[in-house]
Every structure is written in C-alpha cells, then in structure tokens.
Amino acid sequence: MKTLTLTIKGGSDKDGRADAVNEVEIVSGEIIGIVGPTGSGKSTLIADIEQFAQGDTPSGRSILIDGEEPEPTLRTDPRKKLVAQLSQNMHFLADMSVEDFLRMHAKSRGKNGDTANKVVELANTLTGEPINPGHPLTILSGGQSRALMTADIAVISDSPIVLIDEIENAGIKKKEALHLLAGEGKIVVVVTHDPMLALMASRRIVMKNGGMTKVISTTDQEHRVFLDIEKVDGWLTTLRETIRRGEVVVA
Ligand SMILES: Nc1ncnc2c1ncn2[C@@H]1O[C@H](COP(=O)(O)OP(=O)(O)O)[C@@H](O)[C@H]1O
Ligand SMILES: [Mg+2]
Image 1 (spheres, rainbow, N blue to C red):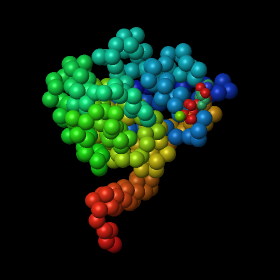
Image 2 (tube, rainbow, N blue to C red):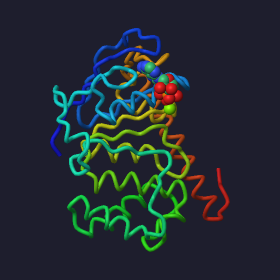
Image 3 (cartoon, helix red, strand yellow):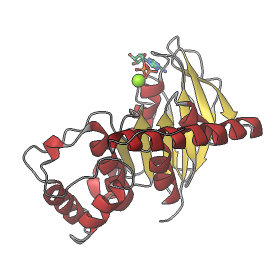
Image 4 (cartoon, rainbow, N blue to C red):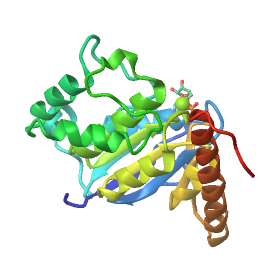
C-alpha cells in the first residue's frame, strides 16, 4: 500500500475561536487518538475526516491528502474510498451468511472470493468466540461483528485511513485489532478513553468545546504504563477463556 499523509487544518471551536492546534499531520502506519469529554467534538472531528471537509462543515476545518485538497471523486466513488469507518453499530444486510456477504464485498472491491476465508480466519484471531462462515450475519455477537468488520477492513477494503469512534470493548481483542490495521500501513484514528488504546497511539488530540486544544505525544513513561496494562489485559483474557471453557481458575 502506498503511504500517504493526512493533514487536518484547524478551523474553530463551538464559540468560533480558532483551534489552538492549527495543523496535524498524520502518516501511514500511525495510530492517533482523539480524547475529550462528551460533547467536546470528537465525533465531529472524525466526521470532518470522513467527509474530507473543505471548510464546509460546522468546524470550518479542512482535510488535505498528501498536502493537497482531495479530488471530488475521492469523496464519492466507493472504489476510490480512502476512508473506512469502524462504526459502533453495524447494519449488516439481513439474511446473508457471513461467507456470502464477504464474497459479495470482495467482488465489489475487485478481489477474488477466497479472500472471504482469509477474513474469517483473521477475525477469529480477534475474538474468543469463533465465527462460523455459514451462519447468518444477524446472529453474530457484538464482539464477533466487530472482529469481522476489523478483518474485513484490513483484508478487503483498500482504504488507507481507518476511523474508529469509541469501539466497544466487549468480545474483541482491541490491541490486536489496532495493530492489525496499523500494521497494514493504514492511518488509524481512534476516539477512545481506554487507557490501553489511548497509550498505544503515538499521539492524541485533546478536544475541548469543539476545538483541538493540544496534541500530546505519548511519553516514555506512558509507554511503560501501556506495557503494564498489556500484561493485565492478557491475564484477564486468559481468565475469561478459562471460565468460558468451564474450568476452574488456579492462582
Ligand atoms: N468545532 C465545532 N464547531 C461547531 N459545533 C461543533 C464543533 N465541534 C462539535 N460541535 C457540536 O457539538 C456537539 C457535540 O459534538 P460531538 O462531536 O458529538 O462531541 P463528542 O463526540 O466529543 O461527544 C455536536 O452537536 C456538534 O455538532
Ligand atoms: Mg461522539
């Protein structure tokens, strides 16, 4: 995948005051967080990126790709779509099996049907509850759906930019999911207050009153905290699996 640069050009906050951060440049392979209280403008910033805002959204921000205003076709043509969004609720097409859906999606992106199996395999590395390709999409659990969607974005969609607005934790190996996406050379923008995800990002944009107030680069100390959280998280995952298997936890 070719590398690209995504630039967010500052606009204004809810009171019309200029964003204190007037430019953020993000390159392929980077995970960047967005943090701030409810109502501070996190989803609005995600939406600005998703739409390639050109001063035409409430924030007045604009988005550049490789330093330039993106061509209009990049905003509309699904095959050229640079942005994939991992949303909280997936509205999958009812009545389709996992496999049929993936085959259809692969085909629409000009990939062969075998890609579908690869997606299921990969998804099953992200969830503790294996997905059966023959099952209808509608019976997937929340964790299975999120795992499937993550794998789908990694394998089938070529979109080099992935936006994640407060993905729920339940049932998906979050860290592996982000690594998978960033490892494919994608830009991953994630709204999260989950300490593991926030500290896994190399930087995080702090939102307040609709504005981008500052960008914090993850410190060495924070990285060490991340490594500790990672251990605890791994331990919790192991415990969960033991309990799921109907076994007794030993200390
Ligand atoms: N820069 C901005 N300029 C004007 N309105 C904004 C701006 N940022 C956010 N808003 C408005 O504030 C409200 C909350 O923003 P939202 O992005 O949903 O916050 P969050 O996702 O952090 O909870 C929304 O109605 C949104 O339209
Ligand atoms: Mg929001």
